[in-house]
Length: 128
Length: 128
DNA sequence: CTCTCGATTCGTCAGTTGCGAAAATGATAG
DNA sequence: CTATCATTTTCGCAACTGACGAATCGAGAG
Image (cartoon, rainbow over all chains, first blue to last red; front, side, top):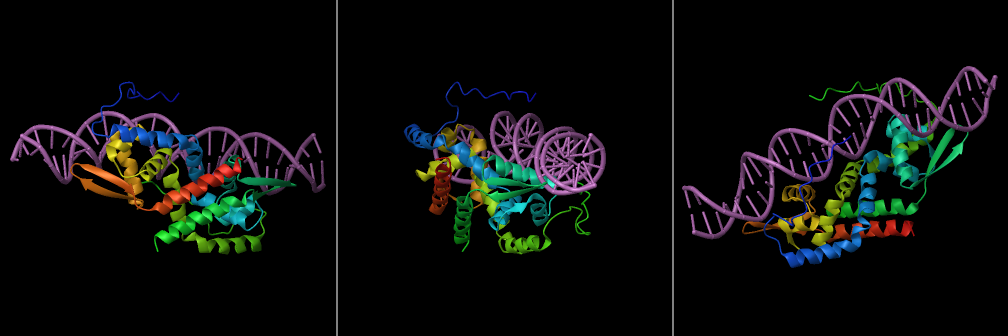
């Protein structure tokens, strides 16, 4: 078992000096609204934070593909490819279709590629 | 040294069967254009794939803050906060200002929060 | 039924990440 | 100068990731 870390006693408020208490509280409550969505957002970005998964999404942007073709596009083993597909599938971005022994994957939500494209152009705009 | 893995000989084309060679090549070349930007994009998403870093960005959206205040907002140690700030700073998203012993951080690029907001609303739209 | 074969899951391992503790830095106060 | 204090860096550790090979699953074919 992963032995619990000796939590640093959040009990007594703080031993960190400085800080503008009123402002900190104001910002804390401003964040509180978004706090609920935040883990999902971080999870979303974590999912996209891998070049192979991005390649999969972009490849599927060109149309439905079977696992072995995706593996060839990525230059990965089928096991590794399947693993990445599973992660994308679990978060609901991919649909799959069974044709005989083959499994075909497709993008389930065009808005995803749009969002990625938006972020990409934001990045491009930044580095001129 | 991290001993090289016994690379599976990309020399001979493939022992994975199946696959539509023409289509795979077409998609490979379609991806080739984006390939250059892709590691940067993945790195960008990796940076955002952490709730504490997202909290920092959102907190700084409310205005400039010193490290210790950010630490209080996050409920983290200053060392940990500084570490996350460093990552955001290294990728050029934060500016900093030195006032006496304190260091004040600010968002350097409003487009970043806009992009995040866009992704967030895309996610929200998906789960209805 | 058994055999084949694409896909998936499992086990393992190296590399990465996030954090706390402690040392180092660097600016101000005395 | 020395002392102090906010911040940063370094180090070590536990947890997580991403990849592979091996084992397994599951849908035809025979």
